[in-house]
Image (cartoon, rainbow, N blue to C red; front, side, top):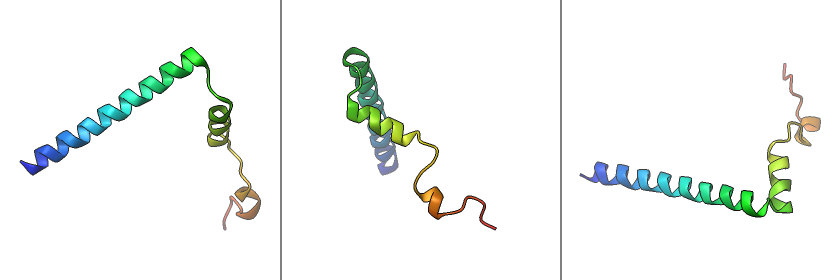
Length: 60
């Protein structure tokens, strides 16, 4: 029974996360993304980083 409750709880959390994500997307469509949100997205999608200068990508 505990396993079933744990599964139901995890499923409920997933549904909540999905609903919050949908709400955030809807708000962005209505209001537009904030400057901070745009900067965070740009940084998250950035391919190169400062670490690339420190850590060689072709470690031999």
